[in-house]
Amino acid sequence: AHGTEPDAGDERDRPAHRRIEYVAELLADRTPRTTALRPAARSVARLLAGHDTCVEPATRVLLASVDLGAPGPALHELARLHTGRPALAARTADALRSRVRRQEIVDEPELDRTAQTLAESGDLAEGLFAWAVTVACGDRTAWPVRWRARLSALRRHASPDVRDAAIRVGTATDS
Image (cartoon, rainbow, N blue to C red; front, top):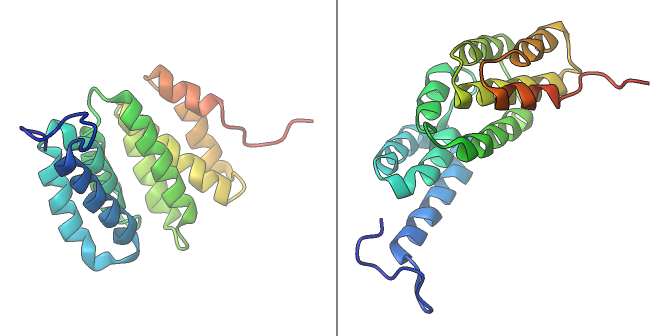
């Protein structure tokens, strides 16, 4: 997405990359509300992911295409794009948490299974995604046993960043 185009110029700065970012943002914004866009969005995300400078927009589009009713395979695929990119994994986890929180209808048992599977891998991105789902669902439901147990398990995750994120979350107000 760069090639010979202007880089850090005073009049133009990677115009092709800016257009890619724009299209990715449009797709990421519209796809969660328009399920018919999901297959096309996944295809675009996979195409973008093949270019190192386009992995971040690819993750936004792929996240938008995740069906929260059956998120497992898509979240595992999304996590693979974060290998060696811990800062991107944290940003994507925050976006996932926001998306799950905003979702009107959530299949909690399916999200719980997905969070468990993601957490068990020991991978940073998958652990952060498990954290995101856990926190979003726990907050939505006033932290019933299921989500408190999931959070407690994340506090023992193989990745220190996942453990730290889980420890920062409170499930009750201490007096």
